[in-house]
Length: 126
Length: 126
DNA sequence: CTAACTGTACTACTACACATAGTACACCTA
DNA sequence: TAGGTGTACTATGTGTAGTAGTACAGTTAG
Image 1 (tube, rainbow over the protein chains, first blue to last red):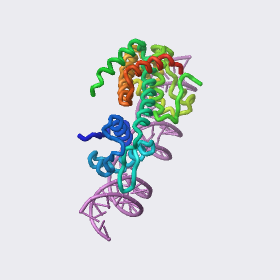
Image 2 (image 1 turned 90 degrees about the vertical axis):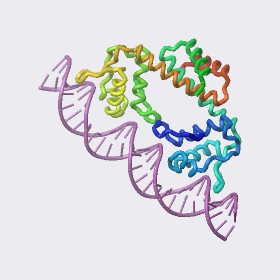
Image 3 (image 1 turned 135 degrees about the vertical axis):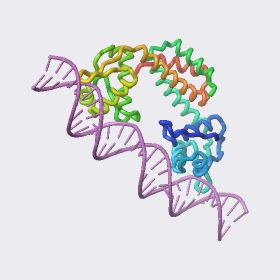
């Protein structure tokens, strides 16, 4: 199994799974600045999906300023990991807020939240 | 504006907004055990949406054991708030886990997470 | 120059979920 | 009996996702 994977049964569309996946690879340093991404046809072949779907993901990543594409050459990672880190951080905070609101409505106490957080933070092994 | 609201522009389908909405009303005690829900046609009229959409939401809630429906009488809240609280709690924990993983990948430290949690928990005014 | 690779841009088609619209039926209650 | 309830259909429209195929422009290695 390659670095990038995809699940057609997921509710989340494939192109969005791809963008999330690539963002993670960049954040973790597996994909460095100016490093070339696999071609749309190559990656489509490996994942057994349509090249158009890859192209859509790349276009979205370019729109977000995370990668840049050059006709005839390929697609490459932008040198802006910190920017990406910032937006991901904001998104995570927002999702955290939503989850906490839900937990609050489910009757979880503040102390339980802290305990749960410590626990999850410790078992981050997947 | 009534207790139940809906946003057609939201990514989340209307029937799912409805189920989430009603679950919250039950958790907060606004809807008590055996209390009758508004009729599918009534609620559809108030929200200016189709009765079928309400029926779909009610069917889903019944499938999850949160409400029960009787032909000719109406739909009513099940006497199982604790069960609902438990599942909501589990879902919240799962969403919390996802958000924390994302935060970790974005380079947030454990201390920042705790601080952020305290902050969000305090500003829970919306 | 040529061949083979890149991204990009189309069109056409299928599939599915969502939502609406309308109708109909069975059941309950005042 | 009349009017309320849930339930079950069919039909239609819409939007998104994904596939399939083709074509074109640019780059690169030979």
